[in-house]
Amino acid sequence: MRMFCPNCNTQIENENINVSENICVCKSCNQLFKLSEMLDMDKLDETENLLRNHPKGINVKKESGREVITISAKSRGAVILLIFALIISAFIGFIASLVLSQKIFIFILFLAPFTIAITALWVQAFFLMFGKFELVINQKEPDYLFKGIGSAGKKYFIDWSSIKSISDIIINNNENYTHRGRRSGARTTTSYIQIEGQKSLKIPVNELKRDYIDFLVNVLKYYKERKQRYQQFI
Image (cartoon, rainbow, N blue to C red; front, side, top):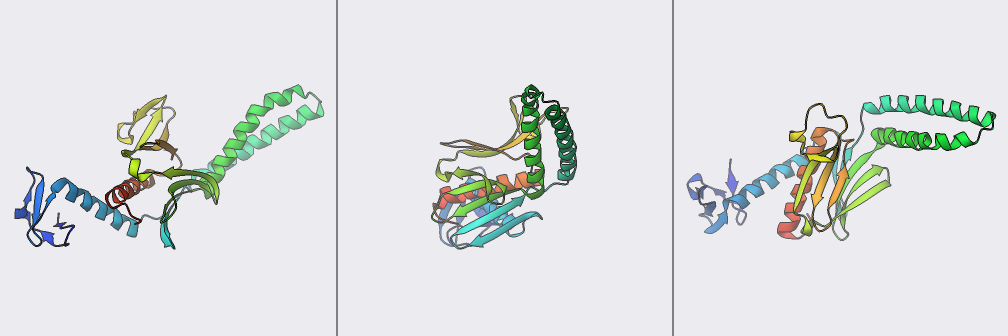
């Protein structure tokens, strides 16, 4: 792995790297650096390359005063969910018509929970067809992660300076696991991106593919490091 001086951008030779002492020296400008910090910089470079050569389904664009990273939540499972929603909606509609024709209005209360559930099902189906996650990095306004369809959705505002850690977790029966520690045979799980800071955020990302979640976590860590190191718009 090649390492470059963050001060003068000259390549640092292997003989000037001391792993045991966690230091390296640039002979070009005679600056001493911590090796761990240099490795972090190498990781930042990898993420920058990933942003330039992002996976399909992800769009990165720079606009006037901001940068927008869009991750599509489209899934083939949307078709199955849509068909299921249509069948359940037709069934509930049929039951509702019978109840109204018999004027047994008390049963309308019985149908209310099913109506709420089918509404949530429709929302989920449309999200899997047209939904997106957007990380917006602004020059003059607060940065945020958006989850929704079009302009309708929820914004999670990010205070980079207070963030201590960023990770993805899986919630199963009120227990937390990283995706590598997920137990087999789990019945119901929900994936989240967890941002720990002065104001902690837990963002549900169940709709995203595994590689998209990994991409988003890496990008969030990238901006955390850049913002906390340089305190300027990237």
